[in-house]
Image 1: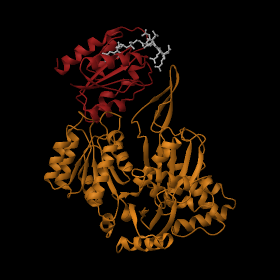
Image 2: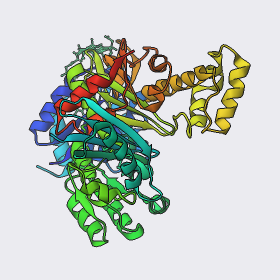
Image 3: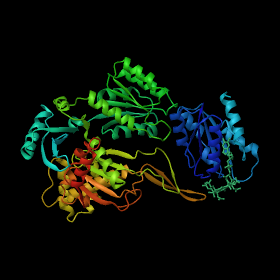
Image 4: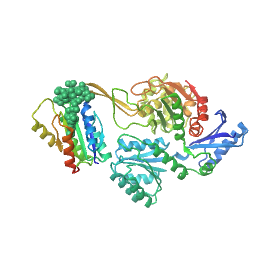
Length: 135
Length: 443
Ligand code: B12
């Protein structure tokens, strides 16, 4: 089954959602490489290269997602894995903001899928299977 | 029962130690290593001295060697901080000298350099199991195409090593296939690779004339000297708990640690979980050939700051920097002690991991990577520099900052038998323990 890299980006220590995602994606048959909390962009990319991952799933819960995620796609391109799927979810920005502009901002940064607060793991799993063309 | 003879065929000296079946040292002798002609010459001359001391003719002989440059290896991985680091740690743990480490695809310059360096063995890793296969296979192909055959240990992605082995074998390389040094991200499994390296070492690597003659007389395969030291330390750690060995040489300083891999509560670990028994080598830290770079690292003024007579020390330092083989002038041994102290500090600092405090909106969190040496309760000085120094305690004393040992007791391998004892660690652990107990002196 496809390998995915999972982690919570930046100085974010919210660990609970990360463990749930690890469990849910593993149950769904993915080979999950979980980097846990406090993960840097570089760690995501190095892990993806070494494990030949098909997707990187980034969580950001504490409101600084925009700063932490900026440039991730460009770094993937530099590292030779520019085609990898990038997903992001959690509480991406501070407070309750209108969703559409937030999503567009992250899509523009090069993420393939952007999930709003409170997304259930099942939604992410279904989307990933679709994007990877696996069942 | 026959006495046991333990030989350490070093780069300059061949040191022999004879012990009885209780581990009591009954003879010790050394002679210059004769790599130029036949290493058996030096060995036999030390042996005749031992015979004189013990009156015995029959010995069961064990040996380690670092003669003729020791076991020189190259490590290749994919991401330098991941499988590159894993490969390097495996090479060091096998007792080899790291000539070079490469990551990602080997390019033309790398291949040329490999061909020029002519390592005894090249360890090729890359990809976690089920992970990246492409780079490992491309690297095997590149080696097959551009480098003249040499012994290879293949310890990468299990889904690529067999194909890789075929490519290399077809090109005339001797290949030992073994388990991945990093089967899962950040998890090391380097013992199988170390083992494969030792196997190749004894079957393929004849470093000097006479080595084969010696090998035929041995009760167990010849191993690299650092591998014997690593084994001795392991035996000690089983009894004494977490510990650190430091061996300052002329060209390099070796540090061995046992333990320090737990993640303390409240900390987050990042990166590779280091091996429980870990060896690192600082190639730019040594008392003779690497003195220049050691002094640069320590800072000339920092060294001189501790001098009772600055000007005298300054002149002396210039002299030993210009003539590394020159002995320190009488009365100025203090300078050498300070330099050795810096060698210990720098090497142990590099061996240790790092702890970075990240300030998050919820407060500070400590992120740990590498080894946590704070719990090392013993630090043991090993090797000639320490044994011959008037102040080994001073040399081994370090500030307990960061992840360095907090309140270690300091000890000395006073009889210089660490490597010799390590030769018996596997087959005669009881004898080895007795030897170590006899040699270890509290400082
Ligand atoms: C517990 C908690 C903490 C604990 C965390 C303990 C720990 N080690 O995990 C502590 C006390 C440390 C903490 C600290 C902070 N927190 Co807090 N915390 C929470 C709280 C109450 C619950 C988080 C949680 O575990 N939820 C349960 C899990 C299962 O849900 P989840 O994390 O959202 O993850 C799920 C989904 O989002 C989704 N998902 C997540 N990522 C991704 C990615 C993909 C690709 C997909 C498909 C899905 C997906 O799937 C996950 C599993 O179901 C939330 C409020 C809330 N009710 O959510 C605030 C909350 C997240 N914290 C918040 C804040 C502001 C902070 C602090 C900055 C300061 C503070 N107010 O205390 C610090 C930041 C610390 C840091 N450096 O990260 C805010 C964030 C606001 C924002 N983004 O605008 C929240 C929303 C509270 C609030 N309403 O203000 N927090």
